[in-house]
Length: 259
Image (cartoon, rainbow, N blue to C red):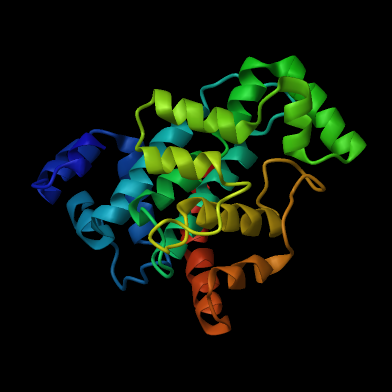
């Protein structure tokens, strides 16, 4: 990730680094040979794969795969599904990034990371406050109360607040912290008139929940049914159809790495 952040990084240098990580190298080759890229011949070279993916896709893929692998080493309670968490985080990240390419949004370069890490607070609660996490689940699933209300009642804070605090501790850019903190109740517009990044993350979160890619089993998934949330971002029917097609193709190609 440090190499990807450099301005003068070369595919040759990146290839040398990635070839040392068998899992990421194999996964990237799988991506470029998937239907998403529709290549006629098989790509066997990591450096060729990098040139096809481009820097942004490579950065997102490497970050997502690495963080998913790190999270999967964490011991979680029986009521927590790391597979569902990984899938939801990856889907929200991909959709946030695709939305940032289609609408005018503040800090679009942070869309993927904000989508990927927006619910890290839920994982931290499940791991670090397991007894309270079970109480929150009982209130939410048994009593039918909204998740944030349950967290506030049991803990005195909510998972978006905890997510943002974690990102601040990890020195992620402040716009990403702000987007994660506000992804359930985003402001209506940024000072520049662009959509706030938190609004994109909220829409991505709601959409992927609505199609069943949620952290909790139904009825835990929340949000409008289908793509109803997307027109609120100013997208017309044609652009929404194109967006969903691209998201479905990208998610199908990448999702196996987050199971």
